[in-house]
Length: 348
Image 1 (cartoon, rainbow, N blue to C red):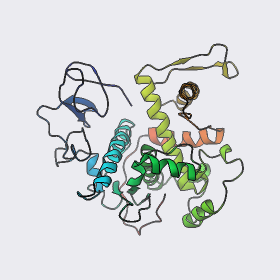
Image 2 (cartoon, helix red, strand yellow):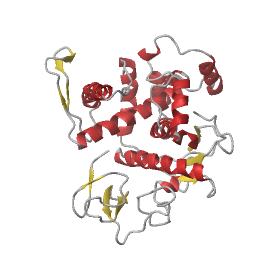
Image 3 (cartoon, rainbow, N blue to C red):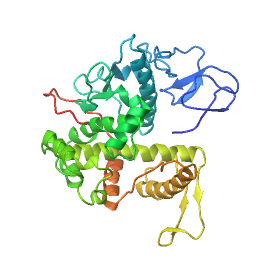
Image 4 (spheres, rainbow, N blue to C red):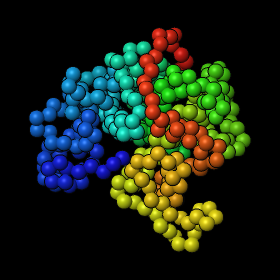
């Protein structure tokens, strides 16, 4: 994420701020301008209190463009559900900001009723909820907003990383498979890299949960869950690409560079040097800056007695998949509406 400043005094403000902590000016995020602006004369999103939203409303409604993508939320009398809802919406604002920044289409059901993007944020405290995606609708169990619940599942499923933002990136990635791969007719190119997504999804997922991950899975997949089915491989890789781009942009915005230890090589004739860029279309350059940055950040985390910030290894085959995602994300694209179709299997 880029660094933001107060429009009145130029002090640093964070993405969650609604008031400048230096000069007390009321501010908010303008999606149209991609910047924080003074709140005077602007209409706050109607979810300002309910979801701590600091964005401004769209011209045609009471909600901001991010909150308007949510079509289902907890009831007003569900205090715990609403607390988790606010946390989830905060993560979703980060997601939508990044999608906008990358120039990816973000099209809601108001524009594309058959296949636009929408979010059902539901609490499993009241009913069974399966986190997943189907035909543009992302369903998320708000129990993921509870750190204890999320950590228990992370350990149970042997996942190195599990966050609300990660869930949103993954599930939204399923929608972008439809938008970037399926509708434009890039299926054969996709299958050459990820495999044939026409394999039965339900059977593949059942096999995944009934057995151990394939031997040497890390040679070709970014995570064990990616081994379940090509759809999951895409969604995991897409989410991972967003992790890399967002973290690299934040590091660049704050001037974080790596220049050492001296006389240490990452590869032959390549020192431990990283200077991330806020925006780049050069995939090789993104990766070259990313890897040394992760080594340094992991070392800092370990010095604090915590786990690695980045507990992943990117094998050459995984880098090829990430490059495939990068090429689609950075290509010129026109949004193609979905054609009416029978609901597909829910992708997790």
